[in-house]
Image (cartoon, rainbow, N blue to C red; front, side):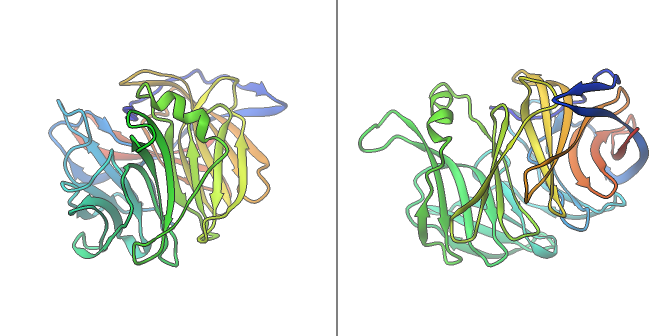
Length: 326
């Protein structure tokens, strides 16, 4: 399912939901970047950022059904630092951020391999995966080198026409350690059969665990250790009942989740944001985007809460919008 984001406008009213005051996000600063393009249709999710606030951006070009072109790394001041070739990558915008500004992708090289690209965009290494007979939607790499992959196994010997959920942990050499069974698997397998894929995002937290989110309401985030254990499960209620998650960003033991009122194949409307404590699962704040706040949710920074969005200016230049609560 297309997870592209366009500017979503919502009213700037102050709401109250589940006893939580919902504050409004308003523009605080705009930073032009050095990246310019003649035409860009939108931006592809996931759009992660790293601990230094650098953004990793995949663009959607006109007349393309999937993200096209390279992946860009932008500094928090808007400077284009690197360009990663994604032409051989498998899956819909499937990649993971590595330490020091590199990324990892999944490529089909006589079987799936996780290919590591360095901070300068050049290929550094590749790890061949065994027993990888599935289509990937989520990829995360642990600081110790283990790899978590989630996707759809299209047909098994027992059910050749089924779309089964597949979540697996591989060691740093690509050997399958274990296949995970999560309690929500049956719930997302049913929509998978009709093409409604419920994978949203996966990110590695500062605690060394991977946070894997699925599209449900309330949002469900599994916190998974490098040994493949589910350390805890976060169930995150949206600001308004019925909203579904579209993206998440983690920073300093906090998780910011983007929720939408509704989505079609090409657009999503009604953006709200919830911040929770990643250790306790406690809801810390709810926010709604003001009328001047929109674009692709690109980064989150806490203490105080700041949200960063990527937009396209009238001069065909990418622009970073910082928004803060009012």
